[in-house]
Image 1 (cartoon, rainbow, N blue to C red):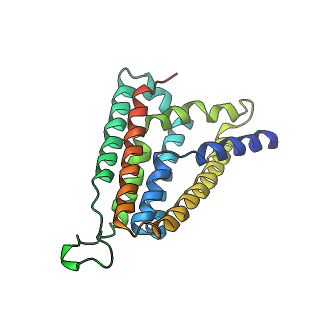
Image 2 (cartoon, rainbow, N blue to C red):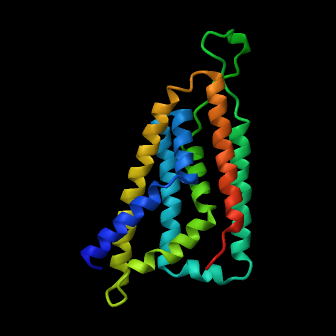
Length: 213
């Protein structure tokens, strides 16, 4: 792999990772709800799932999976169902009353989930997205020099992708923390929850048209 090829990879990955998607929206929503520190665990879940998919692609397992009849259909509809479930859950998420409201009428403040629950949520979102499987199978080989040892090249690409993806996660997490300060009013928070829910459902419906090449 030449330095020019690597810089080209960096540029493409920077644009791809920065594009809003289920993972970024999940990190943003976790930061809004529980704080930037809690979102770090969700980031780890998303990133580890993506790296697992890409490592499987490097080992040829993704191609084998896509060759099994019906396997991609199962993954696709599982992704549709899961993202739709997250959308409905976000839409119906309870909103605390305003600070000056009668305390007896307030629903309890949301408890911060355990680290395992936050990690599992991030992992589930990333691993259930069949578009990530297609991306892993089709994207990386374009930057691999077939005449050079492949393991070292995949390691460089995976490391580079991890750094860029994590950087964008941090941007969204910090944005979510800043956004949280403007969501103190119940009406605004409710609108945010419903917008988040609608976007998650939109991501789920978009998977219906996902097809392997």
